[in-house]
Every structure is written in C-alpha cells, then in structure tokens.
Length: 137
Image 1 (cartoon, helix red, strand yellow):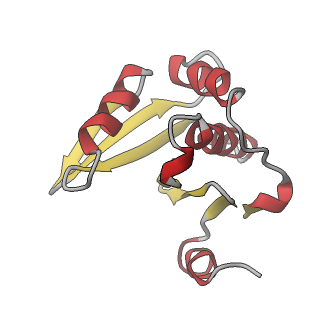
Image 2 (cartoon, one colour; image 1 turned 180 degrees about the horizontal axis):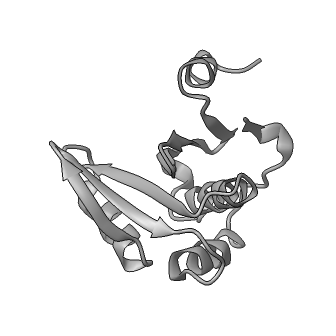
C-alpha cells in the first residue's frame, strides 16, 4: 500500500515518487522544467550514494518524458542547506533564481552535461537497488 503522502503528491501534483527502505525522492512538472522537489535518505544510509541513485533514476524518467532542463531548490533555512547547495553547484548545476528563503538551481538535461555524468557514475556505488516497483508515476 502506498503511503498517504505519496497518494497526496500524486493527486495534487502528478508527482513522480521513488521510494525504498533507504528513503525517497520526488519530482514533478513545473512549466517546462522537470523539478526535483525532494530527496531524503535515512541518516544511517547517507554518504553511500543512495540519494544520488534516486536522482539518477529521476534523470532517466525526465529524459523518457522529453524534458530538456531540470530544476532543483534549496531552502536556506533547513539543516544542511549550505552543503546541499555546494554539492549541487560543484557537480555542474547553476544558480537560476531565488525567492524568499529558496534558492533555485538549474541544469541542462543531456548525457554530456557534467552533473548528469557525475550522478550516473556515483549512482553505481549506491547500496539501494531500484525497480519499477519502487516508482510511482
């Protein structure tokens, strides 16, 4: 059975959700952007590339759906905001805009993009194994 928050996201935003025992990631359409909304990994499984594996799967889905650009965001008021933003910028995302306490970052979605290559490479080392059963579209 799907968790209630997944049902809510599907109903309200047509979200794509990836979830397994280590965490989850969600994305949705935002105008002509593929917007990666959330990535969460349980604390004991962080630093093992599990979040990267979720993002790599979202990249595949976005490309299947025909998206050419990806948007992400960091809320400056949340724990770990500085390191999250630093990581995204260091792998090739660029600043897009800010609104209130949110910083939006963007990336071109193609196989030659630095951030796409980095994500796919590091996802290979993740412990989690994703199947179609882990994905809600």
